[in-house]
Length: 193
Image (cartoon, rainbow, N blue to C red; front, side):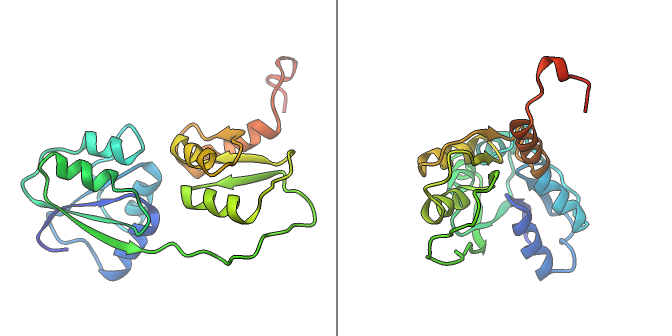
């Protein structure tokens, strides 16, 4: 990674892959993370995170990214949308686009369960497409919860109903949305567990 001004990571998996290939980041390399969960993974790898956009998305990161004369390394999933790389390049920033990891399916057979799940958690567009491909039709009582608005749009595009969406793109927010959707608080219950 020597010679790069920035490394941009859009997932905890990208951080894990890069951190597994080097003991530490070269001096002077700055780190941008697409959101706080990715930034936490980077910090856990002993990286100093210099930029986390307010809007947790590739578009938000493009908008927040400072001008740089140096080259940016974008480490991403093979199936990531080109939003980040194309957006930075459109701003005149030199980007090396590297596939850090590949998402692989778990099979082709339909998944059948003895009982309908209370909830299905959708954490990415690729997960939405796999659920639609292998688990539909879902039982009408099954809650479909998405980690964020982008994933919710991908889930709807895949033909899934969306019942709950995390307020921010994090596992914590997704679980909060599931709990809230499965256990709505009525006005007479507020303040009571």
